[in-house]
Amino acid sequence: MVVVGGATRLTHSGLSITEWQPITGAIPPVSEEGWGEQFEKYKAIPQFRLRNPNMNLVQFKGIYWWEWGHRLLGRIVGFAVLLPLAWFAFRRRLSRTLMVRLGLILILVAGQGSLGWYMVKSGLAARIDVSQYRLAAHLGLAFLIFGATFWTLLNLRAPILPAPAPPRALHGIAWILCALILLQILLGGLVAGLKAGFIYNTWPLIDGRLWPQGYLSLAPWYANFGDNPLSVQLNHRLFAYVIAFGGAYLYVTQRRNTSRRTGQALDIFAVALLAQLLLGVLTLLSIVALPLALMHQAGALLLFAASLNLLHASRKVNTA
Image (cartoon, rainbow, N blue to C red; front, side, top):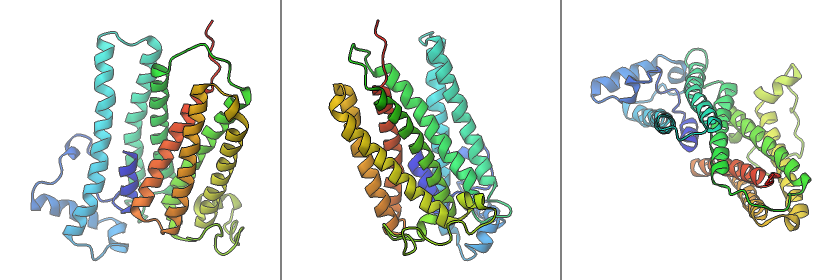
């Protein structure tokens, strides 16, 4: 779902469906007349007039299928949460705690659909793209849903065995890294929303400098952190460096002092972090080639999962 969402964004397909019809919208056009009606609706928005005035019906179908597939996957995810939850609840197989947690995940999934439409609406009237803030929020909520689901899985599967308490510093730094990775994902949403990855495609320099001019060129100054492509891209790079330093420090100082499970979690996190850093640089240098960009987005999901796994493994479990 996250990868297809990234492809929808990178192929500029997200505004190809200009209506939100949760039930009837699951059926795509089945006739040339139906395709023509959808194309005419797309022609009425600014993106067609200002960016794609020469687009033909065949090209429109190409972007339509990305957005339709993304919405279809959203429906499938909703049913994948709702139907098993209803079944296990009916059979009274869920504890109260688990019922509440899964119910909250279901609410988040439903809210994600509404947030997705709220994002799309921002690009239908006065813009040719969706708001970068709404895009970042939509991406962030996707990761929160994944994180809540993955944490629930870890609670259900991870055995609680007597073991030495992990070092307090390990758990604390793992918390910080989880928070930084989630914030970095939101920054990545802003980068995607502003297409900031398509500019300044050099590394380690940016615009020929370590610290480029124009970082605070907008007024008021705080607008640069969401509206200035240069600032947004640089912030994304800086957070990557901070996370890389924090991960390296954690691994070097704590790897020898951990239990087997926590050590394995550290190893997985280190590999995921290195892979994501490499993918980030390659995606930038390729001027956001679609395969690399999608691998980078999937890598963010895997890195977030690895950080949650590390956080879970480094907990101090009371086995008394």
